[in-house]
Every structure is written in C-alpha cells, then in structure tokens.
Length: 401
Image (cartoon, rainbow, N blue to C red):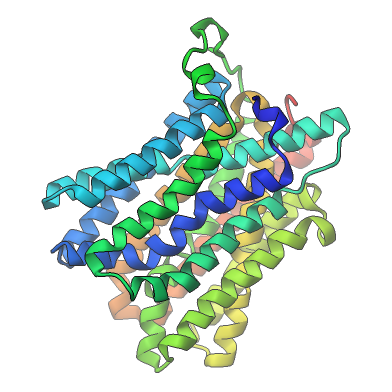
C-alpha cells in the first residue's frame, strides 16, 4: 500500500484529528498528574522547560530525516508508535529525574508529528493539483485537529473526574494510540525499514529565496508567540476577576470553535492558499488589536468578543504560514520547512512566556501591551516579506510539485 493511494480527505482529516486529540487532555491535566507524582511547582516548571527545549531540537532534525528519506508517512508511523511506548514508560517511571528525562524525550519525538501531518497534507494537495484531480482544502483537514482538541477539553474534565490523579497519564496514553493505528494503516513498515540507502535523497539543493523564507517564519512565529500571556495567565486573571469556572471553560471553547470555523471556511470564502500572505497580515493586525484590548481588562462581553478573535490572530496566522512555507520550498524540503516553522514558534513562545512570567505579577494585564508589541514586530517582518516578494513575484511559487 502506498501513501498516495490512501491519502483521501477523510483519511487525512482523521489523521490530523487523532494526532491532536492528546492536546485536549494533556494541556489541562498533565500538570495535575505531575503534582500527583509528588512534583512541586518548581519541579513541574522544570518538566515543562525540558519539553520546551526538546521540541525545537527534535522538529528540524526529524523532519529533515523524513525529507532525506523521502518517506514522510513512514517517519510519521515510526514516531507515532514510539510516542505510545514513551507514554507507557512515562506512566511507569519513578523519580523526578526519570520523569524529566522521559517527558523531554516524549516532546522531542512527538513535537514533529503535526509538522509531518501538515507536510503530508500539503504534498497531497500538490499531487492533486499536478494530476488535475479533485482539490483538497488544507483548512478543512486542519479544522479536524482543532475539533479533536475541543472534544478532548470538553470530555477530559468529566472523564478525569472518574479516575485518580495518578492515572491521568493513562488517559493521555490512550489518546496517543489512535494516531499510531491510523499511520500504521497508511504505510507498510517493512517497506520503510528496508528502503535502500541509495534511494534516499542526499541533497536538497539551495532554497531559492532564503531571506524571504526567514522573514515569513520569523513574522509568523512572533505573532504566534504573542499568545503566550493569554495561554499562561488568562484563566488565572479571569478567576481573580470573578468569572466562574464554567464561564472560563466556555470562553476557551468559544475561541477554539471560532478557530474551527475559520479553518473550515477560509478556503471557501477567503481565497484559501491564494490569500496566504493576507492571512498573515490580518492575523498580525488582529493580534495587535486583541492584546491592546485585553490590556484594558474588558468585562464579560468584551472578553467573549476578544476570544472570538482567536480565529484571526491564531488560525489566520497558522494558515498563512503553513501555505507560504510549504510553497516556497517545494517537495524536497516540505517536511523540513514545516519543522523549521514549528521550531521557531516553540522557541519564540518559550522566550515570550519566560519574559511574561517575570513581569506579570507586577504589571498584570498591562503585560498584554508587550504581546501587542511582539505581534507588531511580527507584522514588520511580514511587511518586509511582502516588499521582498513584490520585487520577486515568483519567489513563493512551489519549486517542485
């Protein structure tokens, strides 16, 4: 069975959903499990720091290997299988150092998964375009990932209430099994493992416009990292303001819901890949407006409106960056380029979170103005990319199909 014969819209959507399901459970409940294993706040912070350091290391290296072998599906299958084994190990390991080491290894291996799923989807899109087959919308496929995250968040609370905190890791483990099953059904591992070294791609060739690629990745990463204060401190602030736990959960669900709608309808109403650079611009502008408004501590209605802007600041930026980066490098570096983008977002987000953590206690909501400035810097990079592209209009066209 070859990847090309199995990459239907339904299959890719299922793969994207399965690959992101664990996020909806791990994001809110992994710290609870760490606490149940006896880690204090400083220990939990060290575990997350180890994971933040591992992701930008693993993504570029593993995606480069996937492109080098010219086997994105096979690499994805091996990673998904390894993630299952590593979460089983994490659930069994004892001691702080063991937890830190295995958690970091999990992040290193799991970090490139979505970059590979994106590359696989973009490759199928390009293949269909070249073969003049029925088109495939990346936004529709990616929306199912967000749906899975939302589902994990909504169902994770009631489910975790039925198990001991010590057993939460096994719920996360269970969420990692479906992507392994889906990817293993896509490729035959013996073919992957016995592929002759002579068939591997050893030379990627030069990137046509490396500085333009840098500007796009840097701009998108800065805009995405400007969400750091929201992710780290919004729920805490809302609780202190008097918002109920149920209302806070509704706010997050609403934001993800708008994100899903944007992914689903971007191709139909906003031009899809043809509007990629516009997505980046409007995503950056939306982030600037959003963070400036959050700095004013809006009430319930204002907060609802601003959470609805997640479809702009996050989803539009994500779509624009994935489309542009994928098109600039062509098939030879398709996975690697998505790995670069993911690593850049990880590094800038970690730095932004660290800086915000140093000043949030004293500045409070005013910290959002720093995030607005970060998004503004990202917009400057994006505008520079637009200017450079205007002088070389063909520079972002796919180099190979």
